[in-house]
Image: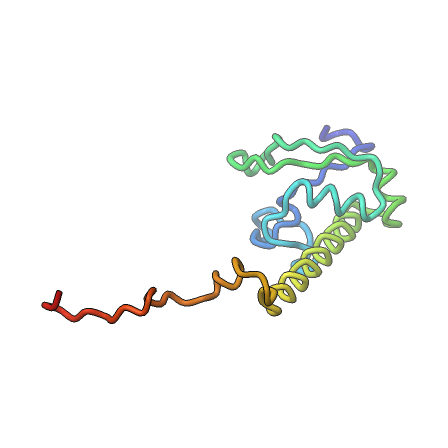
Length: 146
């Protein structure tokens, strides 16, 4: 695989914003997300227009053998044509930007849902927000009284 120029290998660690450049991240911080999954990487590659890809979830990077992170094997010609780029770095940047934009959109949707609160008639969700109060109107007993 290492010597095959018709295949391009992308590891999930290349897009992990928690890693430093010296630890294995290969894209800029603005094109990376924390703890990317192999499915998210494949989804972003598909959104970028890449059709020919193969997921290998059990694979671990040679410099990180303890972490079974997985890799995505792309057809080099298909990836270059779909992203209109001339290098692997440019392909990775396009895929990383797609992943980052999707993560930001889902965060914004989550904030909208959380800020609106539960619906007026939804008793179960409204009950989750109540504080712990004494039930039944019983008075608090002081020490020594029964």
